[in-house]
Amino acid sequence: MSREETHSIRKDGVIHRPPSREKLAEVVSALTEALFPRHYGQHDLDGENIDYFVGHRLSIGLDLLSDQLHRAALFVGDELVPGYRQAEAIELTRSFAAGLPLLRGVLISDLRAAFVGDPAAKSFPEILIGYPGMTAIIHHRLAHLLYGHGARLVARLIAEIAHARTGIDIHPGAQIGSGFFIDHGTGVVIGETAIIGDNVRIYQAVTLGARHFPTEEDGTLIKGDARHPIVEDDVVIYAGATILGRITIGRGSTIGGNVWLTHEVPPNSVVTQATLRNKVGGPNLQKS
Image (cartoon, rainbow, N blue to C red; front, side):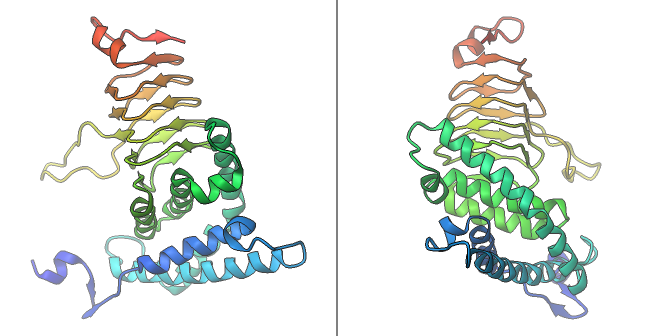
C-alpha cells in the first residue's frame, strides 16, 4: 500500500491541508464571546451595542467554522466520511448555529451546578473565566453538537484543544446531561460512548472508560461499540475513581475516591474501597 493510500490524504494528486487547531481555537473563542459576551467579550457592553457585538462575533466564528469544516472534508476524503464540500459545509454550519441557543441554556445549568456544588465558588464570573472544568465543558458542548452533525474530525480537534488547555479529556461523542460539574478536573477521562445524566458531579482523575475491546474477524477493533459507563442522574464520583465497561451507576449514588468499579451499582448506593473489599459473593453496597 502506498504512503498516500495509508494516510488517505491524497485525492486526484493533491494533498489537502488539514483543519487548523489555531483557527478552531479562534472559532471557540468567538463563539464563547457570543454566548457570554459580558464575561468573555467586552465588560462595558450595554443594551445598545450588545446585540451588535454578539452578531459580529457569531459571524466571525461561524465563517471560520465553515472554512474548517470544508478543509476537514477534503483532508479526510469522501471515501471515509460524507463529503462536506463548500455548500454542505455552509449548511452544516447553519444547522450547528441553530443549536446554539439551546446549548447556551445547558451551559447556564452547568454554571449553576458549579456554583452550588463548590463552596469555594464565590461568583458566576469566577467560574466562567477561572474554572478549568467549565472551560472543558464549554468546549465539549460545542464539539458534541458538531459531532452529532457528522463533523467528527473538527469535533475531535476542539476536544483536544480543551484537553491540552485543561488536562480534561472528554470524547466529543460522550452524551452529557445538564447541570454537569467537574471540580478541579485534572486527569478526568470520559470515553466516546459514555452517557451521563443530569446533575452529575465528578472530581479530578476520574475515568469513565472501556474494559473490553471487541474485534472484527481481522482483528480490527469494532468502532462505536457501546463500551463506556452509563451514569444516571444526581451521581457524585470522587477523585481517582475508575469506572470501566458498559455498566450503569444508578441514580443518586455516590462513588468514593480511588474506587475501581466494573459492576452495576443500584440507585442510591454508596460505593467505597471498604465496601468493595468486604463484598462476599457480590456487591456489598451501602444504601444512602
